[in-house]
Length: 323
Image 1 (spheres, helix red, strand yellow):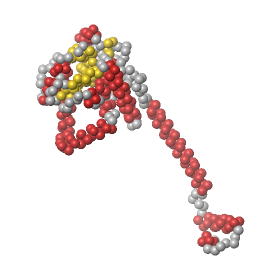
Image 2 (cartoon, rainbow, N blue to C red):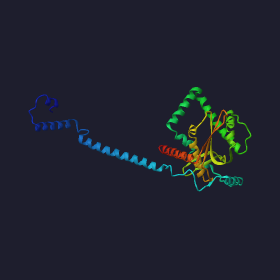
Image 3 (cartoon, rainbow, N blue to C red):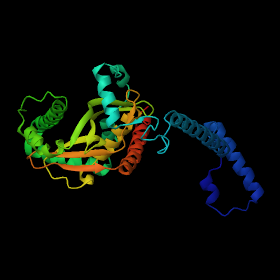
Image 4 (cartoon, one colour):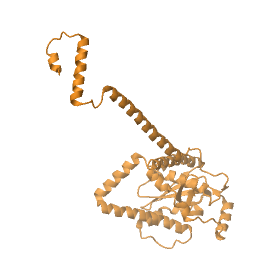
């Protein structure tokens, strides 16, 4: 067999046709010595073309599966569900008297607990759809507190905060149900109670206090703090506790969104045949100074309802990604 190097070592006098025969013979000899090539250029091109086609099919199949999954989790158009079921009655003085009479005669619908087990809560939805900026701020706060208290100390502190929040809500509930007869062992709770004094004087005729409400169409639930009359106007009330002044509604973060979510649930819950279209966010202070009251008009509630619908949509999309 003639080697390639020996061919290139001298200036050949062979014609191109003769060189073609030589290389053909070389390839034949190589094939006899080493066997067939693993892959010719022709075969390689054919394989790559086939592989690309197969990959495209796989990508198309994956995309089809994703599209089918998205169809199962249908996004909610922000205008597709009204915050208010207008077929319900207005909550007014006359209705309140009738409602109280129905309660006395056990005519109010009692919800089975199993009806609420399968739907997410307003609080969980808001926590899951928190903005990255809010998440980072919360994480930074948590990290700084752990540095000061240690992890065990911070966990105990968090449990105490939650317990004080429950104690404050319990005290307000006891007040409206006529059973307030004890002083909380939390000093901050008693300070918050003192902070609420002036506000409570303007709140009357509680119709719902710490009640579970469910929006069956939108599939969410929550415990509404209070539905009552504030200066003779029916409102949904959201109580908040703080150690810092909240001078604007924006400073209460998600409170108005939470309020709108509860309002929408109250207005669409089949257990109640009344509707409420205004709200109140009340911030009580742990040092006892007078609470801040933020009144939300009908339009403000509708605006925050739109924001709530966006958060609910985001929650559904996030959950669909894990299915």
